Amino acid sequence: MSTETGPARQTAPAREAHAPDLLYSETEEDLRSAVRALLAARAGAPSVIAATEAATPYDRQLWESLASGIGAAGLLVPEELGGQGAGHREAAVVLEELGRSVAPAPYLTSAVVATEILLALDAQDGPAAGLLADLATGRRIAVLALPFATPAADAAAALTGTLERTVTGVADAAMADVLLVPTAEGLYAVECAGPGVTVEPLVPFDLTRPLAETTFSGAEGTLLAQPGPAGAAVARGLLAGAGLLASEQLGLAEWCLTETVRYTRERHQFNRPVGSFQALKHRMAQLWLEVVSARAAARNAADALASGSPDAPLAVAVAQAYCSEAAVHAAEECVQLHGGIGMTWEHPAHLYLKRAKADSIAYGTAGRHRETVAALAELPAP
Image 1 (tube, rainbow, N blue to C red):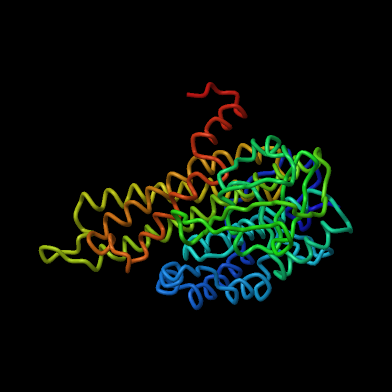
Image 2: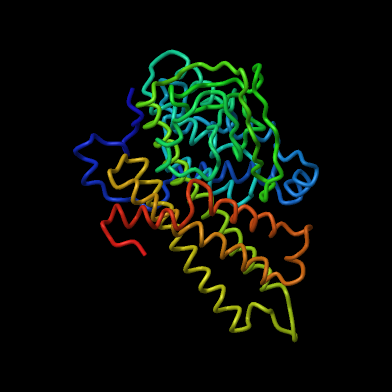
């Protein structure tokens, strides 16, 4: 099975000559409009704040509308396997909008990472293909049973031990139906509701992306792949996760900049908008430059993944090394330039800061990605 569909995905020889396209297509903008309208109606700031304070962040109806109503869950899956036959560029647009709203949804973990792992197994039928079809339609949710901070470079090391294990810091496990568990024997699919499986919610720093501790004791799973193919599949899934996480960080940073500019225009001091003060203008101008650069890096990573470029690992590492810090800086400036209101729980700025900080270590830290850039570009690492 080939995961490459559509005109943007070419044969292997043509990939070497692929020129990155950083612009958004009309189809991508239409998708953005649909996702943004849904999130505005179902995941506005008051709703997200109330859900996190009530310890029930997930909205099943929101996920059903996003996954099956809009069809976002199957963007990476070819049409013959029940998906939309789109690609990473379209999935990146969805993640930009999810970043703008910090909506609690298992899109990155299920519709990107788990889906990409199953696609890499190249199964036309059997349990992997059946699970992939369920993920594409949004009927089920699957997440990889590894800590959220695991980078793609550690995928091979993750295939150790047996199915009897405890894994801490698994993102979105509380909403999952299936856990993909890498072991020394290969990759297993384990039902969350099955015997011997315990999912214990943790108290995360970012309440909009809950973490959990998963324990397998006497659990039974379905073997999806042997260790060799499983390691390559997990690495591919983590690489796609890191690359498209940059788009979520971009959307988060854009919201912080837009909201900060709006607030400083409306907030007056000494009978003048505070945004007219030179010191604040310089800070927001610097932030704008960082957001523009983050957009270029995130779009390049998404395009490299979509086209199957051999430079995709480098593009992903560059995007994560830059976008993670840009998102944190944008969120910090959003809190500070909002003054006193930015420090309150009633304002959503704290949600963006927490999501940005949590994302900054997801799938590898910025420092880890810089090491990857240095190795791939054959440059001396600091």
